[in-house]
Image (tube, rainbow, N blue to C red; front, side, top):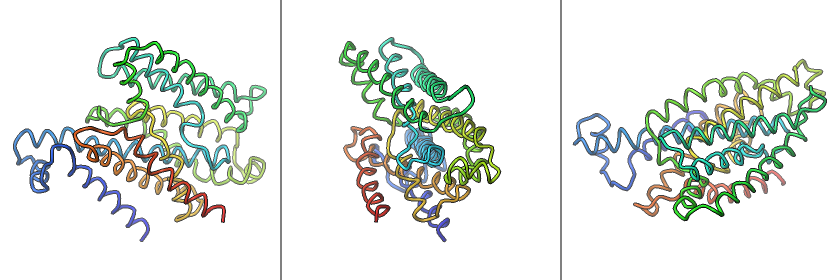
Length: 322
């Protein structure tokens, strides 16, 4: 019954996201446009703008939620999220440099953000390796904070000397959004996300063991060091791909895993797919609100997720503490 409710919520969110927008198309015209029977303008708005945007928001939200759940198990820290390990700083720095240097092309900005995130992943990983063999979760967190702080400092320096127009574009990107969504963007993201998502799901039982601690997991048959490396790599690649197409959208990867644990428990083979559905639903709804609340002006999606995520997280913390 829980799965049915979650599936219906996801489907309902996608239908609502396709049906709303600044263009103000009636439901009948929206359905006709989906079937290809409306005027060309309506068909273009629904098929080429709204549908790929809703699907991309769902895929990104689900990916961030899965990544957050996996990282919380990896570092055994309930406050871990996809951006804790320096990825957001590296991606943000790459994007800001691309804007400041006028890197051209539709894929110049996403590619720069992706490369910046990968560079941060490599630096954090090298810092977290102890004695050349062991990936220490505590050092991983500290390295992520240090790399993120360094990237934020450089980013601030670049923004301080940038013209007003470039400063605005950079800030809007940093707050997250799906203005550039298209079928091609969705296809590229899906091609990057499939393997990391599959790797994290395959590591579900090992993540269950890691939550018990590294020594108990080792005694119960898990190859702890191998699992930690694979989970960190898969989560990092998934987050980098998400940031490249949407900017930095917070709280999805932090709040959703906790909400799912309250309903489904801690078994990751169930937790991860449920988190994907709920994370996707949450981000689709947030994007719909961002597009329509002050239409035709769009709010950054990251602002909406923060406004929704902070009170929800406070409620979850209060329930968890009691």
